[in-house]
Amino acid sequence: MEKIPQLRVCVTDICDKKCFYCRPMGEGNSINKESSLTLDEYIYLIDQIVKAGVSVIRFTGGEPMLYKDIYKMIQTIRQLTGVNSISLVTRSLHLKEQAKLLKEAGLYSITISLDSLRRNRLKDITKVDLLDKLKDGIAECDKLGIPVKVNTVLMKGINDDEIEDFIHYLERFKNVSWKILDYMILPNQFIDDNKYYLNLQTILPLFQSSDTEELLFDTQAGGLGIPMRTFKTKNGMIISVKDSTVGNHYGDICKSCNNYPCQDGIMALRLTVDGKLQRCLYREDTLIDLKPFMYSNENVLQALIEKALTTYINSKFVSNVWSNKINIK
Image 1 (spheres, rainbow, N blue to C red):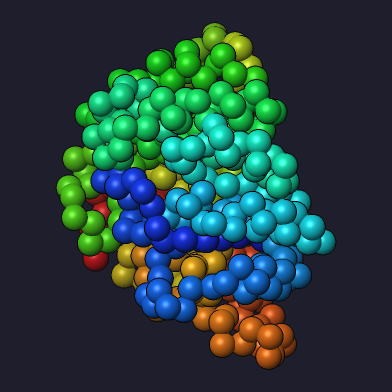
Image 2: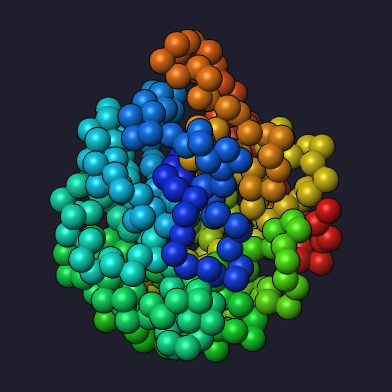
């Protein structure tokens, strides 16, 4: 299988939550806000990237549901030849009301970030009282038949005592799976990363019992990212565990990087709000600016996109190389 990544389209760098562990402005970081893409520019660039072979699209932010044209964006991208999947990552406070519109627009699936089932704890993490809103959104998406993946960042001393609670809660739904992620350590983060990092190898025994069935490893589009142990509970819910110590893919931009081996590796191609292809969350010097060549030189544009994709196609998987004891420079 050729290693073609998913495209994570950052439609906004604005968010109405302030999750303490989040990268400032999320994945949609824009150096120059005045150069943010218009809807037509987004669609044009996504079309060019799809023509180069990308087929899996995921909308992120910031909070993508704050982007005023999100429904039109999904509806338009759905019509592009070559697109096989469209999903969206959200913590929207209004998801219950938005779910039907997302389905009508053509959304294939949705990822909902939920880090605690305890109201005050989740409020401490996000700085917003949103537990009931997210629960209502999950229930509505499930009712409408939209496949839902609930993402939970497991953090030592914060929510690592809620695993059984999550299983009990999520198993009641028909179209919901659960993905557990380890805490991501970012360069220049302003908090003590190791204080919250939990090696997810320590929780695997909770799923290796007579009540669960272990399945094949799960991966991101193109087989990229971290191979995730997956389990099926007795009620049929799928659980994926994204443990960064297992290993990751690294590419040509990683060879001379001071942060190698990093936790994120080569997982997805990102399109920033100002029209750049982002291959790495840790560095700005690997960005590829597409905006100057829009509508004027598609040969150059395709060459730049292919350059980015080559990083993924030629990437190599390295096992057991990252550790939270590595000091990121």
